[in-house]
Image (cartoon, rainbow, N blue to C red):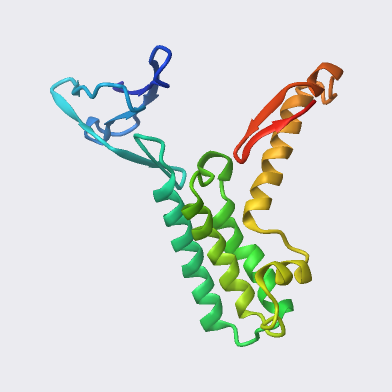
Length: 202
C-alpha cells in the first residue's frame, strides 16, 4: 500500500518522517513540508508524481507549510460570523436569555474547536476572533450603553483571549499532574510555555 511522507524540521534538529497510510488512489497523495529550512523535493508513488501542497486541511484545521495560523483564524471567524448572521436573521428576540445560549451552542465551537493547535499568534488574528463576540454582545437588548468589557462582566463571560489562557493553564496543570493525577512537589518550580507566553511556577 502506498505511503505519504510528511517532513518536519524545527531548524535545529533532524527531520522526522511520519508515514500516513493512504486508503485511496495514489492520486490522492500530496507532499507536505513543515518548516522554513526544509528543502522542497519531488516525490512519486510508483510512476505517479506526488503534488507539492503549501497547505493542508485535516479535521477542519488548516495548516500551512510555515505553521502560520492566520488563514485558520480567518476561516474560523468567517464560519462563526456566518452562523451568527443566521441567528440574527432567524431569531426575533434580542434578549440575553435567547441570544446567549445560541451563541454558546452554535458560535463558540467554531471559535474554540481544537484551539490548542491553531491559537492566534498575532494581535490582528486575536482581534479578528474577538470581533465575533463583540458583535454578539451588540445584538443583546439592554446592554447598548455599556462598553465591551462591562457587557462581559454583566453577562458573566470572559474575553476569548482570557478563555484561551484559561484553557492553556488547565492543559499545563493536567500535564504537571501526569498519569498519577498527583501534582508532585518538584513540578512547582520552573516555567511552562502556554499559547499566551511563559507561565512561571516558582
